[in-house]
Image 1 (tube, rainbow, N blue to C red):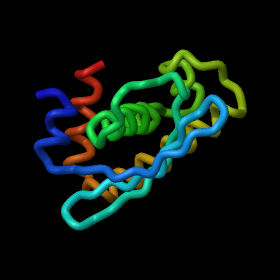
Image 2 (tube, rainbow, N blue to C red):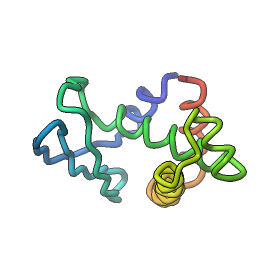
Image 3 (cartoon, helix red, strand yellow):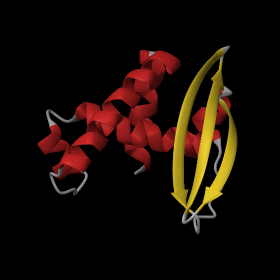
Image 4 (cartoon, rainbow, N blue to C red):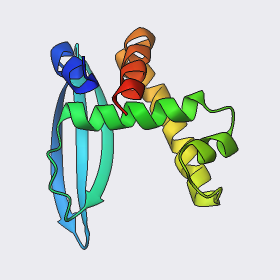
Length: 123
């Protein structure tokens, strides 16, 4: 089963406020699941017209956060993600580690691990 289908079957939903400015579209979102909520903000290029829903956003967040968690250190993460080892990318790595903690708390460890496994298979 695709991760997006699994997320939809689990009943995770998303509400989001959208604003546009310059070349970016910014979302202030809240995931909802079994009475819990998780705030998650993100932005995309204004020309990106792909649909934003709980499954697509959560799939992306799980993929990047699980990749950060699976890395022994920033250098390995940067290599896995084909990134330059810059200070800005180190901040991105640290952010994804924090997102992983939030997702684990929101989803529970077992569901997070299952989603991470499916995210890896979907790539």
